[in-house]
Image (cartoon, helix red, strand yellow):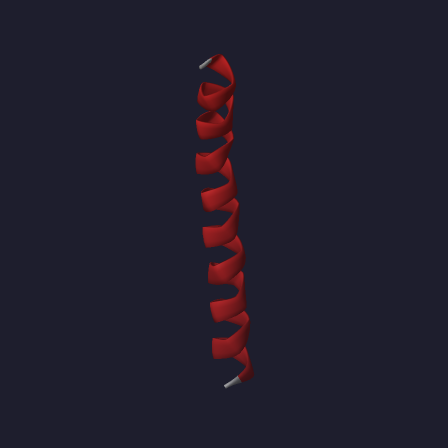
Length: 33
C-alpha cells in the first residue's frame, strides 16, 4: 500500500511539473500581447 501511495505521489508531482511547463509559454505569450 505504501508503494502505491508513493507511486501516486510521484505521478502527481510529475503532472504538476507538466502543468507548470505548459503554463510557462502561456505566460510569455500574454506578455507579448
